[in-house]
Length: 145
Image (cartoon, rainbow, N blue to C red):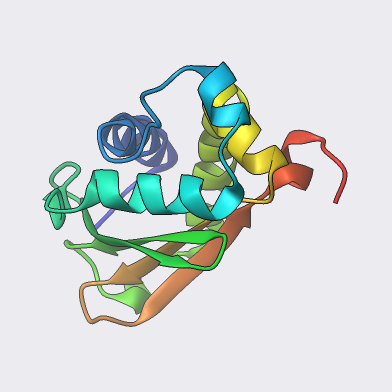
């Protein structure tokens, strides 16, 4: 079980590093500008194909990456704790700022967000029950809806 806030911060940094290996849009910003949102989502999900489930560290496993229209969902499991052992607000308060800063600070992902791509992060306990979830969209980066 995640014991303290510094462990969660470290976990968030490690998780983002692992996500970068899953979905990165490895192409130039000029090329991404030419691609529509649905094709960007398809490319990101295809890039993750065969790479999940993936242990992010001893505590977290990325189960899968799925698409629903312009939304990409990352399903994560805290493997060491059930859903009732993890504080949902603590998870959200740590992960949302780390993930939004990382996405908003990446030129390619910022282009994807500006085209309406939405990143949804779902966290569940080892019992398969949801702990929390959040989305990152263009408004998360200060863009207009």
